[in-house]
Image 1 (tube, rainbow over the protein chains, first blue to last red):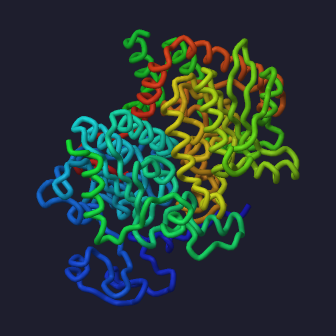
Image 2: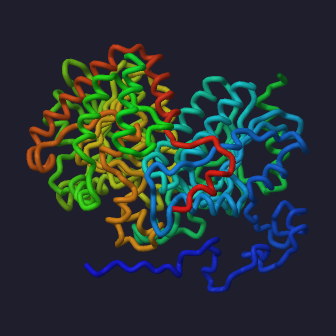
Image 3: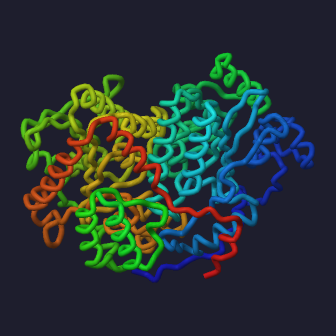
Length: 283
Length: 323
């Protein structure tokens, strides 16, 4: 066998989406090409005013968009990943973690805490795709578990907002174990009769889709979000099937019965307020 | 069991490996079994070269599959077909059988032996319909108090258009959720490849038995190499990094027992491999049958809730790395 060559040029720090060759500014709408200032996008919840394309939202911004001002109290802030396998691909896992922490200002790919939405108390678990593709390792699994426990303790519903490429390979089999771990946490939540609303945002795939995210009493998504166990590229390569245009998208998932609703971002907060009121049932 | 014994064994394991593996995880089971496993670990984990050999053995075309064990271990096997909603999925075999004087429910992934059978069974890669058939059987088992035995041996859940449209992710999630609710004993045997969501879909159990040359991984070495190294040909490197072998899985608290295989691998002596697996399975079912159902379920959830390795530490973790 030929000596394996490693092409380091493909290893980007922030892995920009330049599939069409041009490196686009993050505030340029990939759908219609309109360009916005930060404050313009923020004011419109990071939805393109021209074509309604939904830009990705970081965890802290998402929390700010959803909760009543000043009601969010973060929990489990100090949790950090270990490197149980001493994992090394092109770079050590510890280095990737350090870089992600510096570039995102987050300890891992999920932020949890108590909050109120339209005056309804709830527990929030929000993922951030910018932290290693929102991958689920031991910390994300533990945080979701603690969020579920915190909801049970306070007898409030859990709201999860997911954005994830799946399990974090760098933690090997332990990352796969976060699937059953989060499933068990949600089962305990169900036993305690606390509601669970799952908001799947772009992208919610693989291990996260195949565990807690799919177990919501109510499951909703945003327009154009990719929600698939296996992404289109891998399906195309392994099966050589012709993929439908809307393969894996929220719209397709709604049609096949896997979602309760697709909500434009502007309607998400009122929707959560309404459903939280239903679950609290006048308590 | 004495907590002190367990602690001492774990300390020994820690020292032995010289890595802080067990900090966040927990090995389950009695001291005697821990000791037995410790003896095995002392034998030595696979070297980098041996790691790929293990992957090859786990996928060996002559390796015994689920039905080979069914034939050798079980009596009165009755296969049950169909998810009662849409389809029959031959990638997953389900049925009832007698084993050691009790009726058990079997759910096993089944690769094919020749080209025809491989195609019919989709190389052991189940669609959502397969997992739903499995869930149907789990409900039967729960109703009648039959222990459930699952056999894991698949490259993964099928990555196809129809599989996605029919809800592959949701089926895997709901199958796990059902397993977390059952009060009958649940045992998994990893007899070849335990891969990713396709494996854990029927792998949320009270005890996991893993054959010495089987693998259990979050992703196939090829898939991992393609994503992290951007080159699927670097599968050997990915296998070494993922550490999917039985000894590492045991260290991480993910499995409970390594089942010895005949010298050279299960394919060289399927009868002996079945005898060894049957022995471990029988012993495990005996142990679990003694535990009340509600307790089983609580311990099962507790087991998974403890899996993971992390620290509570502000920011310094990031700076410490270097290496």
